[in-house]
Length: 174
Image 1 (tube, rainbow, N blue to C red):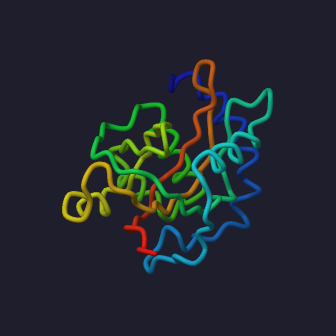
Image 2: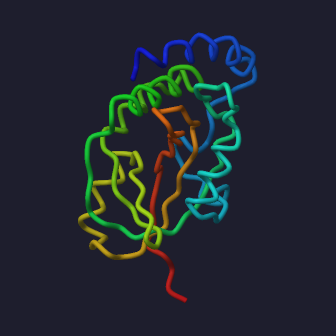
């Protein structure tokens, strides 16, 4: 899969060079978490918005607009290593659009399974926050994820949207 993505990299380098001139590190990836910039959405909404930006001929894209979103899901407690093609995409995004923060890509080693109703989603989750999962959450409990969309790529016959979980909270009781 990685070798087949190299044409995407060549195409993206030209498009990204313009973006890099105007890009400053975003608050979502620096100290002091900006809770207020995350808009309430569903995972299906974030995925649909991300997929809309992939053209018919595109092999993928690296997102500049990160669609900062707060989504409510059910915690399952299940995790697995991030697949190689997704890990490559994360590393590329940090390396090209957040070059001063490219070491932050190392924070994404595992993806966790989250549920939204009957739908299941494997999402790369920042390692520093996962150490609190066992202490604060039980499988089956609701949680609010604060995530960003970093883009998407074509994987076989589907579009793989890459959403990074930056932070979480237990939902506030009504």
